[in-house]
Amino acid sequence: MKRTKNAIRNIIFGFINRAVVLLGPFIIRTVLIKQLGSEYLGLSSLFTSILQVLNLTELGFSSAVVFSMYKPIVEKDTTTICALMNFYRKVYRMIGCVILFIGIMITPFMKYLISGSYPDDINIYILYFIYLFNTSITYFLFAYKSALLTAHQRSDIMSNIHTITYILQYTIQILAIYLCKNYYAYVIVIPLTAILNNIWCAYRVNRMYPEYLPKGKIDENTINSIKKQVGGLMIQKICSTTRNSLDCIFISAFLGLNMVAIYSNYYSIMNSIIGMLSIVYTAIVPGIGNSIVMESVEKNYADMNKFNFIYMWIAGWCTICLACLFQPFMKIWMGEQYMFTSYTIVILLCMYFYALKMGDIRAAYSDAKGLWWENKYRAIIESIANVLLNWLLVKKFGVAGIIAGTLISLLVINFGYGSQILFKYYFGKKRIWEYFKNHILYAVVTFGILTITCWICNSITIDGIMGIIVKMLICFIVPNISYLLIYVKTKRFEEARKFIVQILKKRRAEI
Image (tube, rainbow, N blue to C red; front, side, top):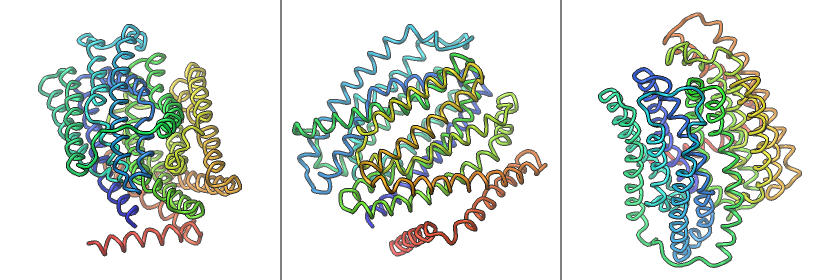
């Protein structure tokens, strides 16, 4: 139950953090567009995407080191943990240097990534160097210490620190926009907050785990194991980046900064919900890693099915809410000039969201098992397919083509091929058909309920905020009652019910 307790604590504080991360950028995007214009928001989205690509240099070392800590933490092997921290610190400083070098080398090509004009009062090179400094600085400070919190299932500590520093950052940024009307004043706050966040996190780690100091050397076998895991992680990170960050770069290069701003408005809402659900993923991976070390394959397979059922219920409900509320919300928030005129794009975004979530629990077990190297070919094929499909489809279908290309690669390669890898190397090949059958059922049920809920919402003629409230109530009641009626007599529902009741009883006893 300690794993469950840690996971619940991480989820609770993670949700608080995500609520701040959701509300803050929402307010800032509104202020930025209203006070300065959509092109400034487009620049922000573009440079963020470019620097996310540069962050590929990290190669997934953090995940590999955390994975390597699971066993020594269980065995209370302080010497190995200290050696891993020392290795992690050295690698991170090298990564910081590489990011700075590559970032400087690509500077002359910056102007080719912007189609059309950009604000006259902005020097894109100065702006780019501020974002570059923000990306690299944490590698030279104490980012390596956060691995201890993650491996000990105490990511709630990081969540609390991030919550406070983000509130400070957003407050100063809003004041900078209103009082200074200066985009540079808005941007410079970002690296300053990152430095504060890094130092504060290191201080907490030092107080909680004073016995862990970056010293000593890890043995050759551990280094070779980490290198192999990092090789797989590097490839998967490239895949993830081409799926997310390069979308904005393609849109900027082919369709201009205004379209980047419109797309990023929709994606920011969707990504906020993705971030909320990722809290569950982040919270349970260390516990799953511990369970894989200590429990049987049969126990973990049963747990995965149980978690998957609960997670896809939540993900399906979020998909339905997006489909019904995206357009009316965007109309109130940004106005019709910053909306997609085609509802097809909205539906594609919802399908994109659902397809991303289908593989989350499977990915949690794959990461906890350390199957990064085994996933290398899947990631390579997905990356190539995603980039090629984006390149081909954006020319004919615009934004819809980019989303459709990403969706195809997600469903066929990420979910289909990625699931086969986990079952081949851990759960057993025979069980995969049950897994696929469950997901087909969840998808059919979700999109059936989505159709009914959207039909009810579209028949509501009330506009404005009151219309949003009414549709939110419909989206809360109709899908969840429908799920309950459909699943109430199934085995998965009963397992999930018992699990939730057990957690609630445990929490009540602690209170």
